[in-house]
Length: 321
Ligand SMILES: [Zn+2]
Image (tube, rainbow, N blue to C red; front, side, top):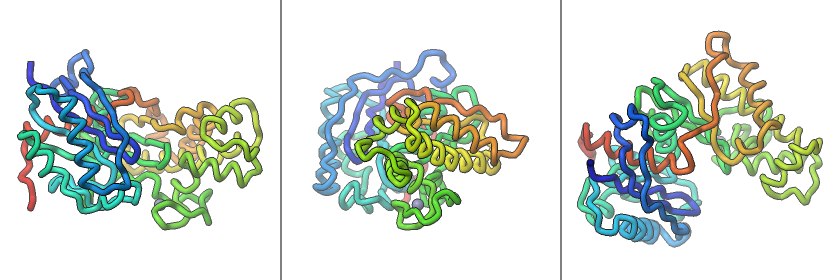
């Protein structure tokens, strides 16, 4: 049996690591899903700086490896990642000083094996395409609606990264419902400002929801129990999200769409509106595209990071300077 991949998922609040067995392109054709061993996590020292963040990740990875032989390190990271150079090219301030960080050299020096890096949503999309809702399908569009709104188009087994590593920023499409609403990217009127988890809480507040409903779970429970303002917030946000997904079906024509993220857990008040939005915008030829819950599990990004590392081992790309 081949050695596992040491996979890392580096996010704004936590870092996860695991040994991943069986995440190669050939493994995706087998009925058994990849196996994750020794899954562990630590809080991200997000405000201390890149050296401390990478140091914490390497320390956790060392504990997880525990002397085992590994083929490669696969890293999934927050931020826009230049995968060819293994660098963070752009990042929000959720990780202080993260932009410009070299992700490859410190990990390659420490572990002595090739290192591959992907943006976390791209890693999630690749994991979902190979081992979840996209299994046995030629293409998948992942849409993740949580603290932010992101996405990933996976085509013929490869995550589409774009020329800047920025492809898939589904939350930064304009929607009429978001007119006048600021977006975290600094623009106005984008989907994410209106329809992310924090956006929906603010929308509910503007619609007169009970001020005690300060978290997503409480708001979702109220909506499911029939609270008018909470239901209306999910309806407006879900409709806008569905319209964007419908438009993306027209542009990308994926074989399947997978939905994930905390807002997806809100249930029918949101999901019914998403379906209505898709129906409103999708052209007839793509309107019946299956829209499924993501099914690769909570470690999909680790699976995707491991899969990319194995792809790179099989067909190495010359690392650019
Ligand atoms: Zn935006």
